[in-house]
Amino acid sequence: MSERHITITDNKSGKSVDLEVKTGTHGPPTVDVSGLYKDLGYFTFDPGFMSTASCHSQITFIDGDEGILLYRGYPIEQLAEKSNYLEICYLMTYGALPSPNQLENYSSMIVHHTMLHESLKTFFNGFHYDAHPMAIMVGVVGSLSAFYHDSTNIQDPVCREISAHRLIAKMPTIAAACYKHSLGEPFQYPRNNLSYCGNLLHMMFSVPTEEYVPDPIAEKALNLLFILHADHEQNASTSTVRLAGSSGANPFACISAGIASLWGPAHGGANEAVLDMLHEIGDVASIPKYIAKAKDKNDPFRLMGFGHRVYKNFDPRATIIRKTCHEVLEKLGDQSNPLFEMALQLEEIALQDPYFQERKLYPNVDFYSGIIYKALGIPTNMFTVMFAIARTSGWVAHWMEMISDPRQRISRPRQLYDGAATRDYVSIDQR
Ligand code: CMC
Image (cartoon, rainbow, N blue to C red; front, side, top):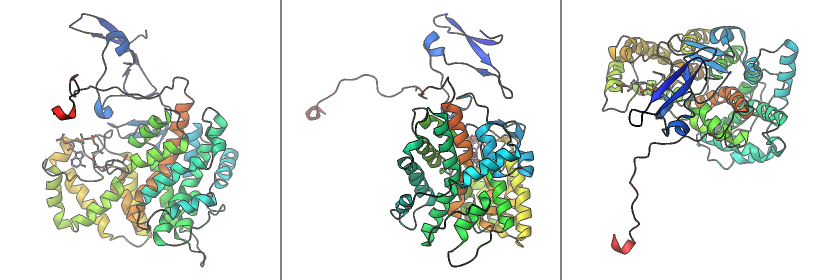
């Protein structure tokens, strides 16, 4: 038993158990309840995981009260200012910042995995032109497992690494193909001489008939958004990847499950929902009406891009994105962007409102990200796809961490059953 423990006594049976209190590098002490059922015959009940640490992890730390976000110990503000997305991918996967040589080798490895199998491209034709790109992405990423039998032995660290590289490399190619499919334009092959984000812009916006040079403003903005979206510890999609992977499922299927989870409006789908909301509000004069709707418990409307399960002070990513939004719009000569003006007003009004103050509801990462994507010419239904590309680095890092953890077991929650008590079957003629 560790130095610190919590004793639980059942006041019915008088039986007691000591539960070990574990401490991490940062964060609250964590009570190990894993033996509670065996020792005392009880389950714990925590729907929505309000107080539950589902695993050990060394990847990302969040302090929601202080607005702190660290990737492998490095503050997000420093990474956003000084790093680039591929370096973050390396950091996520290997746990340390790369040397110049390591980064060069890693980048070369990634660009040599960016192409899609030509047969995979035919999958896109099975989707109607107006299919949501997230729907296509869930299917196409899941189908990658049909192409890479050579790397699906998840017990082999080399196979895991190759799968991680393939996923990080191919996500932009798949995302761009989703977009091109919706336009009816030919898919563009990746270009190995471009940066990760420059290549994505090339595959989305170039056509075979014309020269295309990615706009450095767009490249820089995408790089920043991808860094900010790279990981967020045990969020819904990452937990989905871990849960799916805990059964030994192949990595492509697991990431596909993560994409499906990300799509929901309470999670990554919020960036698209924010833009829809701003369009629906229409003008600054209508903001009070929508604030009232958000506060009305009989109205399902929520202020999209507001609130977070973990951040109860501010979301440090939102602070960085708001500043970048100003800069990007200014550089694009779009300072008086009406959507941005409305978002700023909406934020100001909401933050002065006791409803939002009492519940500690602040703008989250997605409140401003969609405005930047929109300004870069990326259509609304591609916003969550952009999030998925960025989050892939986090998903694969968590998947690799989980599979290589010797304590790893299949994730299998229990339940508080409150359905019908045992009863006898009644034959149909007697019902
Ligand atoms: N607008 C109005 N009221 C809200 C909002 C909102 N956006 N968010 C939370 N509340 C209220 C909620 O009604 C509840 O009030 P009460 O205590 O009176 O019942 C209280 O605040 C606590 O909310 P909750 O739903 O219990 O909090 P949660 O931690 O379960 O949900 C959330 C977190 C992000 C799902 C929620 O805040 C939300 O739906 N926000 C809008 C969607 C959104 O922006 N999602 C993106 C999250 S950040 C990107 C990512 O990492 O995925």
